[in-house]
Length: 104
Image (cartoon, rainbow, N blue to C red):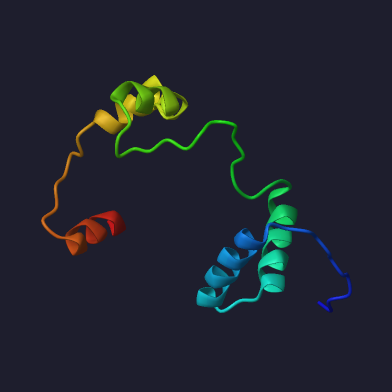
């Protein structure tokens, strides 16, 4: 697709420099990165990463209570918890054996 739109934006120069370093390591330009971002917005019909007002949780020094509170919504429901607790009926010593059993 031909590029025909021009985008101008004022951004923090330190953030721009840091981003350019990352893009350089990835082998892409700032324009490529913006096009990737805009493409994902179109595909996902929204911002392609979570936006939150919660501060970053540093797991290296967080209390168990802080971690449980942050991830409470990710706790499996009773049906999923029951399925996760079930032991498999067959055990396999190698990945190859497990894959063969899936084919049968």
